[in-house]
Image: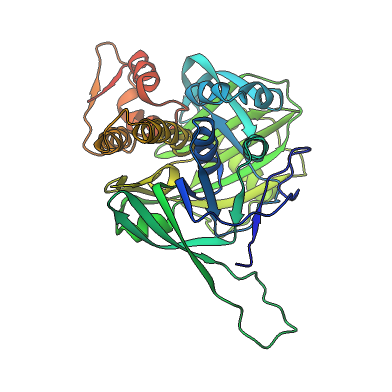
Length: 413
């Protein structure tokens, strides 16, 4: 097989650093499909549990600068278990509170029990790459899972090597299609919103309330640094201001019009003026600007048998609270623990199905599906208009989210 795998190398963390190539294994205890943050984290947790791991991704290693994300307190605890949290904190910005504003007026400040971390997502990926290198786990890029036979004591995954693009212009021959079969005791699909694993299982991802569109910017900020995440709501539209390390800031604006307008300085000035007047006038240079669509979806089930989903493969929501990434990491940790327990004869196979059902229920709550919003005595007057928009925008989940909502006068059932 003309292998396209890479071994992530230690050093400056660049995905372009390449070590020895290794053949795609014919048999592993866990095959991870997808080499984004959730997939890399899944592989590292599994390797630390002593499982044999294979990782495939149909794309190439990403070299672009990338955008910032929020790592929740629970995520930082999970990363601390892998000795990665301290390094990420050194290149990120800790945030200890959330300021809430509605229609131009500040309504409340929510003190976080534990801080969240604003950090470039590429730094998270680099840290996971380097840790996997030290564990001897190879990443096989340009490899696509095409079909999955799910049953018995293993899953059989047909893997196709994706031809490099663009093709060799000097050759008039079509590129070779190279396929192999990997036998895995378990498969975790962490291959994003267009998941091939989910499709191979025949699982539908149900669309919820259509598509949300955001103009997102990252730029320098000459204001004094603050450890506050600003969430701003104008009617049904949400925006956020996230301070980053090294005097930078990330501004996100949900939009309903001007979807084709570029995320440039003029557009940023317009949005800041109308939606976030408290922000300092933006400088002329924008480091990063994009218009991105988020198709809020939830898979009907999070897997079956020996094949399971994590991260955007199972759910997509608003970007404001970074919940899809963070819960994806928590899902990965839970799946790996149960897979390791099963491999060591400590648990039944159906423990995975029970865990997946619990995670799906959590997502129904976050996405407002089959959930009852109840106002507690003394809830502020702004709460009824904001409750449903607030839940996916907070950088929290699980019990931490429930406690924060109750402090604002909201209970979910």
